[in-house]
Length: 277
Image (tube, rainbow, N blue to C red; front, side, top):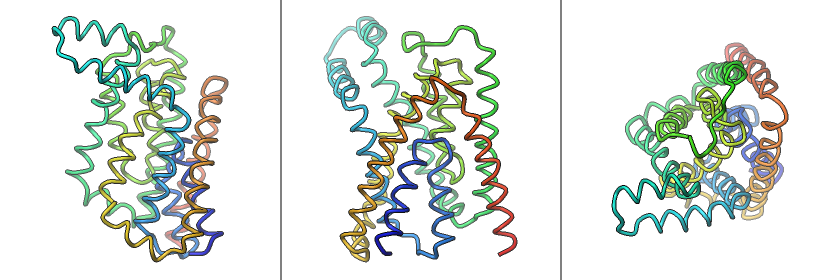
């Protein structure tokens, strides 16, 4: 893998991890188009790059959540514990993210072979991109009909777990993680910015978990030049940070239909090309 290919993969990973168009699908397509053999180690490195991006963007929120979370572990009466979570939005967010991560963790362990088999099936990836498009379209239609949007104060644990289930489904390549979780948040009536913010923060333990699972293969990164690996890693960080910033601005000021149209174009195109070639 040369430095240009490494940079391209890094930029694609960073942008598509947080824009609702499926990073895994685009990496599958790039591997297929460029002929570069997929490297689990390099893909893991790029995921760590996007992890750095989301932590860098939300570091103040993360510090506040960690402080509130550990304070909630102090032995206090159950009623006081529950009231503390309700009164402290950072404590509530921390617990919801922790519990919302459980579905993806279970799916990753129990359905690992099934999900891995999909990464070599471009037709399946294209189909799931089409599904992502419909999720984005449907959530926008539903959100417009919900008058009273939920803020963090009245977001429920059931909402968090439902978004966690959406994140679990997004292990399948082509189902966008951010697209599935943000769309689910909009279906549930969350405020638009809250749906996106919770989605991005929910990605942190998921990315850490995926990186840990794949860490046994990290030694194969030695097959890639240090310069190329570092260039791709840095590209993933920068593009990921920009994607978060762009997405938070877009979801406040516009709808997500442009991403739905994109998925509806790229998905069928991928299917057609895979059948021809």
